[in-house]
Image (cartoon, rainbow, N blue to C red; front, side):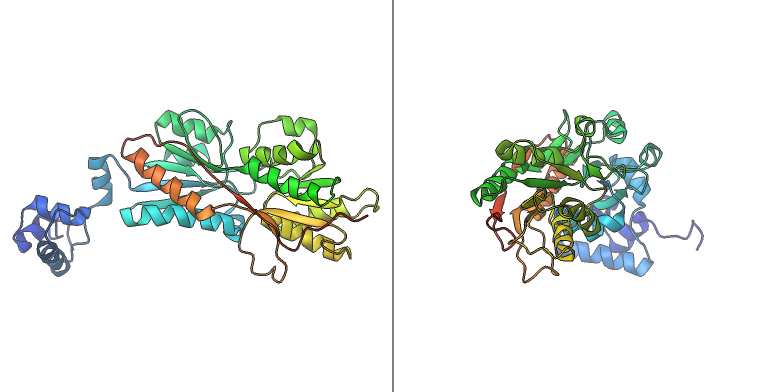
Length: 354
């Protein structure tokens, strides 16, 4: 079909016997068009083979692309294995999809923790959600702010002119630490999420900790230290079961007098790996070592084990982020939101061994 014979919005309007402005309202999803008129316009479009307005031309007129970026620090393979990431993105799309807004995933890879500046500079974006990562010194964040792209940061970073949506990380971990000390635990180790997505794993040195890192990681460490003081920290390179198992073996495969009586993992995925390490070493949970996590994630392979964990409202956090995006795109600045968490005591924590 030549460009001259290709149907246009005007030919659809003529076939439906309505004004072009009315046909335009139909395709924009406006509720100001009577149902009978809407059906007549859509029937005319189907008869003529008209697919709808050109999205590029429409975005030039409205100055909106209809696309929201979701920055995911890790590779998509890791993100989609993490039920918390999936729940969060589901909450965001639950709000945005009915509005006709598309969510564009902007992942990292083995060498970087997010999209490159070159990638971002070529993508038309109405707003960006930092979904599973966010550093105060992220050059991509500076680039987006210079471009004037509204940003919603989930769990961080917490910086000026960026809307923050988070949870009570520190308070929840304080409650978990009090639960462990109430059971008599004093030798407690923490398996942390990556402080930065640069492949580092192992004991956390003071220098490593002093460098800027993720807000949720920092707050969850501080929550344990508020109750127990300084504790050993073992950093993982990714939020993966295999990383939790590697960390668990390093912490638990030591003489009994040096072994922690409890391990706090900063995610349920990492805690599942620590449980696997304990089983591989012949240690009973919780008789020989207690294990706790964070998230309240659905891990179908764990039952009948019930993980002691701090439960966060992940899907609702995604919905709140989605609603914040809508307000930003409409020109309003929503308030920051911090959601509450709760401790769920399962079968993986018990009295400290004598």
